[in-house]
Image 1 (cartoon, rainbow, N blue to C red):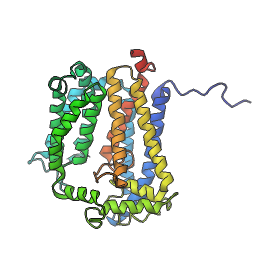
Image 2: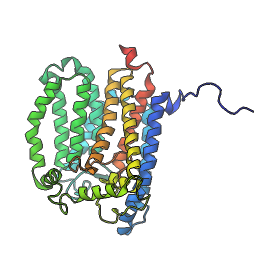
Image 3: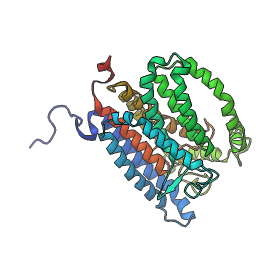
Amino acid sequence: MDIAPIGPIRLPDSGLGRGWEAAAVLGLTLLLLSFGLVALYSASSVYALRQGLPDTYYVIRQAAGAGVGMAGLMLCALLPYKLWEKGAWALLFISIMGLVVVVLPFTTSIAPEINGARRWLRVGVTVQPSELAKIAVIVWTASLAVKKAPMFRSLGRGLGPFLAVWGVVLLLILVEPHLSTALVIGLLGPLIVFAAGARISHFVLLGVLAAPVLWLQLSVGFRAARIASFLNPASDPGGAGFQVHQSLVALGSGGISGVGIGQGRQKFGFLPEAHNDFVFAMIGEEWGFLGVVILVALYTAIVLVGFRIARRAPDAFGELVAIGCASLIAVQAFLHMAVGLALAPPTGLPLPLVSYGRSNLIVTLVVLGILISVARSAPGGKAARA
């Protein structure tokens, strides 16, 4: 009896995996998510035990978040992505209201200060409004960019509305304060608008105007110390540069093939936030250079497929929202890894699908679900629109 398939193997043309791009995004997502849970358990087990918690405490909570996130991914993948365009303003409003509630002086009972910042809402469940703002900015910017594209030659009429809304969102996030998320959103919006046809000279002008504001944010307190340590790593290895120094020690200890899963030493109190802000360093220590190469290849693949999905999207909104979704993964992943390699100042950005943090995990999976929805929409794509 013949059991081998006859003829070419075909990817499914129905369900979540319609077309190879959708199947690729789904497969890469599951690979990164599985890899992340294994890496997270190793990085967080000792930290949990030191707190008097079970060694599986953080990975179980992350797995629960992954379950919610995968449900969101499947729902967003099956729903027409055009629904996001219709609800763009409503989503933006909800996002801004959440950010406002977080920073109001009389809402500390539901938005407590944790580690010097107010970023979380505790309303039965703990949510981070700045994470929802990432989706809102992507969807709203893509939606308005479709309508404003003919006006992009004018700075006021073209970019003016975007700058006003981005400014409100960024200001609220900076008040928390949460500079790293503000940086991500401050990059995402302009990337989408630039892809829609905005003039690069306008962004150069805006960059010059924004430089003093950015300098004020970076030149005070611990941020200034981190910048100084980044520019001169040997200046304060036991203070502001401690995390990056230990990150490089972890990466250097891994060698080619790593010290082995679960055998890393930096998690024993040497590297703070080993399960979150510096999980990449833990992966480098335990999985080695080969593990790092595989991780970079997985992120590169998912981003490249995302941009291919954008190129083949059936309309301008689909193209721009796919660019925003792929860019979100790219910016967060490669900035996180750059910090671990001392190529960028510490930012506190999580590694998508790997770092501990359920709000970020759920939002990342929803964004990937939107990307899959665009991929499933029309195989004709941009070529058919030309």
